[in-house]
Image (cartoon, rainbow, N blue to C red; front, side, top):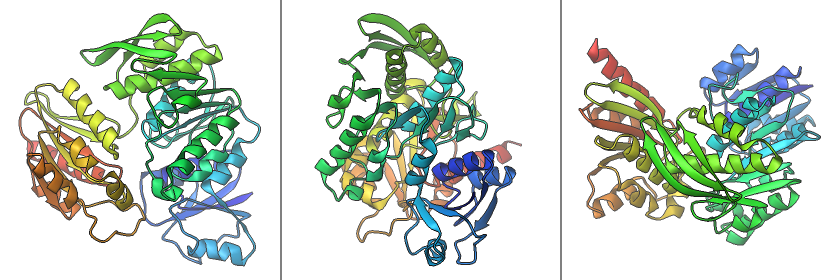
Length: 445
């Protein structure tokens, strides 16, 4: 089969393209610009057109498109003109999953890390999973994809209602905070019903967060801070480790993690609860979790100067809850250093919907720099700007500055002693971080 992927460089689309290529399909695609995923695709022998055009056409049997691509895309228009089947990313993934054992992980926060944890634990337990990850992890052969002969583990994107059409065997719902509500007609009942439908169609076990108001009642088992099948009793840091005492089905265990933050303890508890419910040995799962390392852009630490205690942290956090968890983790890992956050908001609709929550989350940092919204294919909304966040921070008495252009950030601050610079956001803020580190390295030579 010849498959044309429109938006092939996206994190979800590129893993599908790799899967099809490795199973023997003829795969090619297009994207608006080059990126790291496209470099990986090309190294695997996949042709990628840069830019979208009616001429990007090699006579495919099916065209698959990302949700970011609209119906007026010239390649989709050509497919329809020539009678070629057009499928969304979600539809195509469901067709791949037909007839296989499935582990699905969804939710507003933490699903990438939790998916990586499930895959890591299954490999450690002797399984050979195929993995579709919505991020990058160095344990996977293609970073966001692994080809295996065992169960399929996939991150299930809840940003569109069609996620409720899946029927996994096992499901983890990390939480459901009504992010992307604009895609659900701003209807909270519709949003909740999609999670309910997904849980109802899950064939064996559903694991949910006991404190989540939208989904806690959907779980066959739950995890949480003070309630659930798996409960968090206490937590402390010892050097680079964090150690949690947990209770699972009435028995107490010690959970050790190399990744920081209470949120990651909760992610690990979700994984442990799921694998325990299936029948895997709890001690073996705990041993696997102790070896887990973070996914790309999830508290990635670059040491600029150990002696001066100057560090950079890259993190994909893009919701208020994720930012709050990130800053809390930074305070645990770097208790004496100044915390400087450089934040790029992601999507105008999210900024509009959160209505002041970003400023409330960011105010726990010592110093904050904010650049303009990364639209992620959204059109700008009049009078909605990242400056709103800075205005909110100033009203909270915080030191904050707004920079309309991303490149202006590099001139805004210089590396200082006893300081952690957190580059935060799901857009291209990573480019500023990389330049910041590069400039520092060149000056040190």
